Length: 93
Image (cartoon, rainbow, N blue to C red; front, side):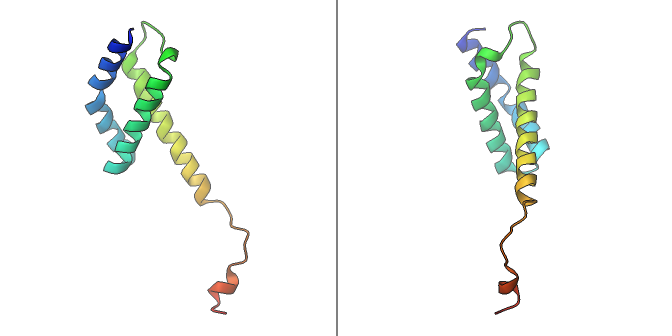
């Protein structure tokens, strides 16, 4: 697949990918960010795409994995324990 064919195939999936991103995130801004990150990864790792395989499935897998990784990263940072002693501030001293 040439660079032009790759770009055309990617742009051709843009609307469907946006709807998929909306279904994953339930937020328009986050969906736009996910779509942009998916496009960036697809263009960056273009050489990893195997010829004569399902391009659409490859792109959707990139988006799904990106969403899952971001979700896990966000959950992990929210559950991180802050070791500082903020009880002093809560008591009003």
